[in-house]
Length: 343
Length: 249
Image (cartoon, rainbow over all chains, first blue to last red; front, side, top):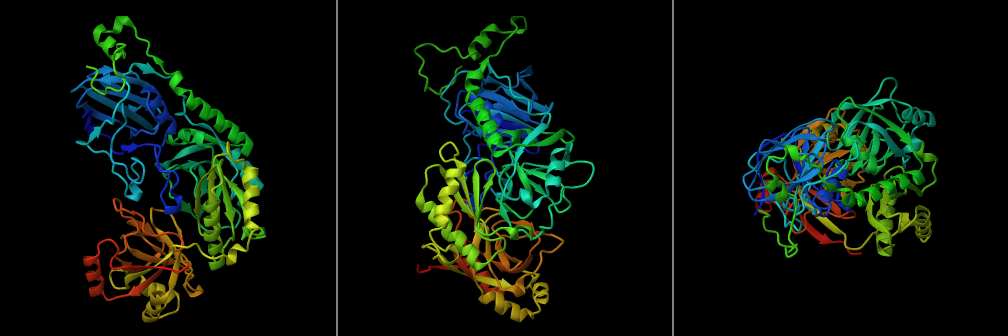
């Protein structure tokens, strides 16, 4: 079986897919990849389904060795990457041969980088998904020595690249009012949108702290509200009025008041903001929010068509033959469902 | 509270594709009953476009595809269903179970019984009588997989959360605050007081039914001695000797 053996790995790498929607009633958080767009990009680059699992690497990657021929793609926060010492393009798909070593370094910008395997990472399915959710006791962090096995790979195409949306440098977060927004005075809600925030130092896959100068954003006398359902994107105010944007891994219920909900399509930007990055909130109506999200979903659907062959400078190509091989040239007789090695 | 200006129930949107039907701004048996009964009714209707129905303490949440079901259309359906009966007096869904869970109250296994009893104005023995005989309902499952909020307990147990967090309580810990229990399904820090310890595992990955409890189930935490507790846990590593029986509809 093809796969990647983990020789070295950063401290917060885990297997992630689209998570576990639909199990709120059992207390199961949606969870899943912090940057869902990156999952979709990797799937498009490898010509496979976006429901497959990938390796999510927080801040820094690792060193991996191919146990068989396999395809990979790299998306999300751009990191230094090389194959047996040769630099690899980010936001692109590549071929690895048995024994080749893939090294992924630190993120140049953003937080979460993704390593996708052709056929997805075929790890154990837990409560309907492969996503690790540590607080729930689902899965573990990936450790040195772990094998990341490939699922059945139905494509051979590699050497594709994608111009990825830059969600790694903060910016505007579109937010809709929710069922607790009116716990906050109109003045507070307006000031919230007029405030320049920076991502604070407290951030993980569950939520991200927003810091700003000046007064906090306390709700008006509501500290006894009943615990209520949490949605990914909810902006929760702690007791001292400091906002946290809750991400998909947040617990399913919570008792802190929430001023509104960041649109799903802007959550990648929240997750990918490094500490100190500038962020601000922009209120949009429900109708506007639906239209913005709809446009985003259309772009995600169009990702496969947006993947183009990587442009290569022949002068820098040391071994034309190997490029031809990894370029996904298959004969007309090739069985597209043959999952054997391309080598 | 700010929300009291509402006349309940209320229907509000939640995020881009969620709707929340709220029956009260405070926990009570009738508001939780309405929540459970209404949730069941929504599921039974099977409206096209509804992707998920879940309950919190006093609300029903629906996630839906707005391409299939528009917000206003869903609100109309919900108001129509709300008008069909007095949900605060509705029958609870069928298929609920009563669980009796052997529980050690106090001792070094559950070190905060004494201070909880004190805060409620009782002796430890009175507290064990009170908590050990209470028949509580799974009001909702939340925060972590299979972790139930149970209640309501009497007003004497309306104790505030601690200001300091207990760094870690074990799986099976029975903790108490604001007239509710939580029965921990995971190891976690908590601001609630650890008054009892059970061998009940609410979440068992790999089990045929990894999450044992359902909202609406009822539980009694039967006081047992430490030696009986140890024996129950040894004999039944999943539920610590808990029994279950169907509650007649």
